[in-house]
Image (cartoon, rainbow, N blue to C red; front, side, top):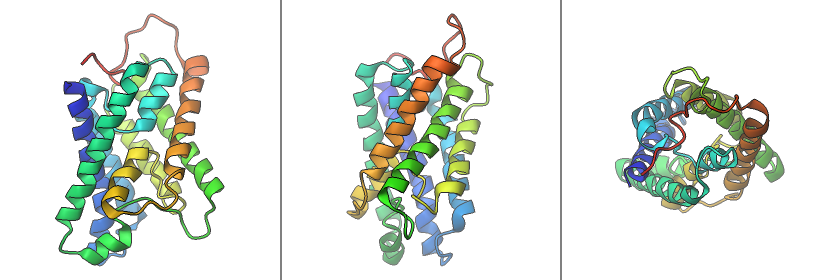
Length: 235
């Protein structure tokens, strides 16, 4: 239970700050805050959340990460559903909290759909799915390389946060660079905005599966090394 509460809490922190930066940029008259501030907010929030809760739950905060770890044999399949549930609960709480916090700025809430990722002008659904898959592939590779591998440098969540920030710089204008079904889900439910919802489930899960398979069969170091913190501890 402690691991699931940590997953929900870390997801809430990550999304309240990340999606909140999008709403705050519009509420403050900045037109959305700019891609730099949005990437920084997401990257810092995730780095802090992983460093804070990683020892308790593994610090996934993303259904795609949990799925990719399970594909790689680094997270038990029976616990994928419970982790997803905790992450979605945290996401819903973040969406509701943002709606409450920015109640003074209804125009910003409406314009940003409470920070819900969306497709850029002219971006087709197939392109969006591929982009989300690639961005998630990069992110989950970083998770394996900096937190799962027994050879990983002990840098907490810093590398993972940097990966999210870098992905947003590239993909923010294409898909919103969610890389995370829960990141779409929480704000979308709070805003009642479900356009292209399948992009944010299919793309990240496909990318995470490819990352998990590649780690398991190509990149994994020899057996017998100590497990890393992202492989969740027993509840």
